[in-house]
Length: 459
Image (cartoon, rainbow, N blue to C red; front, side):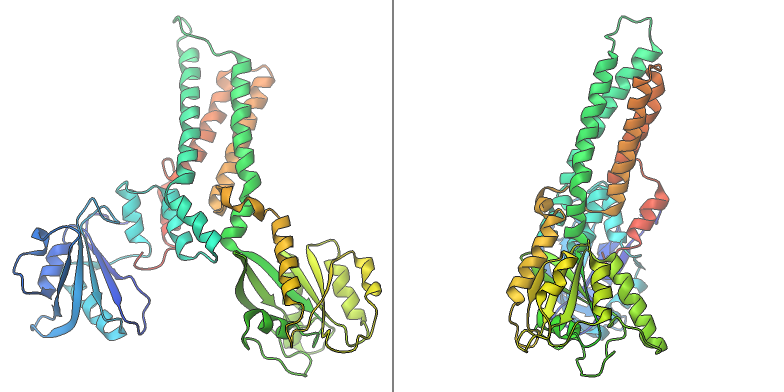
């Protein structure tokens, strides 16, 4: 674990030019550091000033020279983000100003915080649990309004309350079983085998419901990947540009212009969708283009939705048919591009692939509304209708719930096999510990370190 007894500091806003930049300081010496570099009309030490107050003044260097005009936010522990004394310096958002002020802060007793260390201190100090801490990054990285709503719900402790309730029931269950086994001579109420099996089945059903909705939660958190595939010059890059309403991808008449994948995010009625423009799929002797074609096929395999773009102004090519065969049976749409031009084949030739067919014009925008509706329909078909009720979105949480479900199933198998009840306690306790790893009650330090290392600096 990181040292949580010293005072840490970091720039909490992105480096660059902006109206405001923020430097966050947390720890027992936060106000001592502030007193050493801050000047204002009041001579009162910062520690003695009112909690949750705003102080105006100057940051000065060791020679008394003004570095920047700032305001300070005083937040005394435990009523702060980290549950420690916190001082936030709001200065002008120039790179030089932020760097100089941070340098002064570090020279006067603070050390540079590690990634995620402020949130880690909030966890260590008991202000939030591990599931809530992980939700902080989900809030920052939310790709849609629904994803943000879900992340805020987790930050407020929705998942933690459900897991806590389940662990409480398992704790009571384990305690009663162990007392019955360890003190058989006592006149205690015995737990009947049907009661044990029934309670385990009830818990399994709750876990099954969480897992069933987890795909929806994951897609709200990570988004839906839509691969735009097709032959060269079918209009894939033009379609990407039309979705984005900007010239993001280079479009030319030269086949093979796109040689690598381009990823961009859009939102369709609150559903985050990652559009992946891939290289045109064809046989080629060009080494670089071959790499692009291979990557295009890989993205087709990974995608939640495939948009197969076909140029309807030219006869169907064998490469078109091969791509359509690959998409057959998948969550895919056939997108007939260039509907503003004379068609060179009949749509009946495509019906054998069993995929929805839509006509659009990437150049004029015709048909784009229907295409977005069809993409949204495919996304909802994969489970996004339950997004608001989904408790699980984090891959780590999903795996822990799955393992807990398996442990309970082993316990149930043991009981139904007629073995002594105490043989099932081991598996029930494992389920209890696995659920505790979600909130951090039973998690190992190395896992905590790994989780917080993924946070951004200053958070």
